[in-house]
Length: 592
Image (cartoon, rainbow, N blue to C red; front, side, top):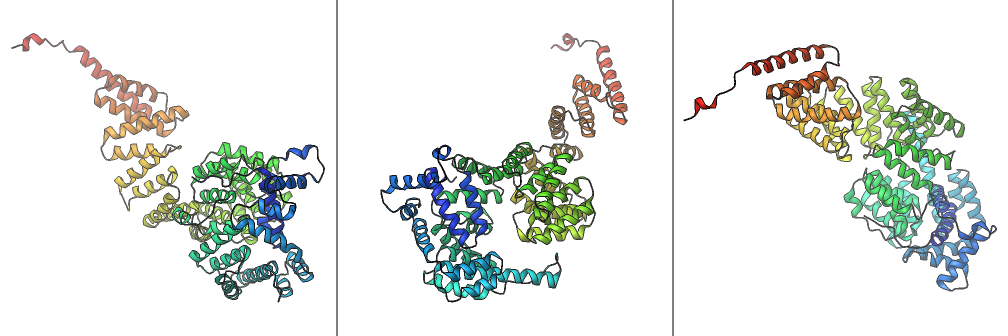
């Protein structure tokens, strides 16, 4: 398990993040800049903030720098002292020094970039030699190509159709960036963009190497970490990464563990980070998502409510919160969340997903699909919308559309167990158990501790086409060992052993299931089946008093089970009366 690297004070983290926000914002990396700003606010309050003016932050930074390095130049000293002991500190100082070199053309290009006029921004920087201008030109060119790709997708394949459109600028960018990278002349931001281009070209191993170089040189670029995370499709790949020790690495590992469904490890790391960033909404949101993945819905709901109290207009991650409200069937809370999201930003993918969940809970599946499609028009790679739309198509018995939606989700993120599970369910509906097994196996590999995955695979093995009872039993036992909350596996195991004539094993699982249902006060048909089998089993084993007890419980239920219990009681009383009427056995007659 990784630990937080460095061991610096909150003041060091604060200065690092303040510098990073400026560097990232000036290069158009707004997602990374926003993330860094959120962590900056998440740090503990400065001690002098309660009785100081606006300059208190600068004074604290200056005092920290002097105490550490004893150097007169505040700007350069701060860049050095907040470093991590490797290339990151040097790069921060170089980046600060370069801020003074911004010329008029760079300011013009940045204005074009902010207005999303990427071609104009790239053209304005032709011939500029400074590193910031070079990165901004290449990044603007890349985004212009992405914009053109999206336009071609809409023109050629419709808003939700498939398309082979690619970014037309990738080849030129790859050649230009490779020429500098091979000479060691590419800075951390350029290496990040080169990694993105390599990833787009499906050169994943090379992309991982280049992105590791980028984050080791400048670890405060969260966008680079996210790009690297997308390339870590399993834990084996993660262990091969050459990452230097820094507190940003801990954020990265926690996020990767969450993506790989290693939720306990992720939760441990976020708990490690929380003392350093006690007011971080990011850590709170990720912790809530971890509890959601662990199916601890009450805890996750409480954390999301706390998150909304802290940031009432937040939409990021609220689609996960709506999933929790959907599972718990909280109509009023989900309606309130949907209404609030519309007032915040009607045309955000998260808002559309929340509304889709609301209509799905009301069983208005056509309207739900409409809003999930709207979310995909806003963001074609929005994973939750594809998966949830697949669920809706299953409810509507539109299996071809469901399969297509789930496949799109898997294409976007092969680690989305819900899409694999949905594909398995869909093919099971189509009575194609071999296909269903293939997808269920993928789901169990991603979620080996999720009892639902094992139950689904066990039911698939039970189908008439496969009739593989031994394999089904193994799956159900795995489900039981992983805390099957619904008790599906216990009932299935009891029924399977009963059908195979294995009465002792069947009785064992019926007893276990009976204990679970009594604890949950659930007296449905499974409860009746367990009582009836155990009554017969105990009678046959000669445990007449126990059998009579089970029959007495059955008398409280109506239907055929009550008549069966009466018949069993008559048999039990008959046996008891016959036993009582027999004369005592005289052992002296048989003595030698």
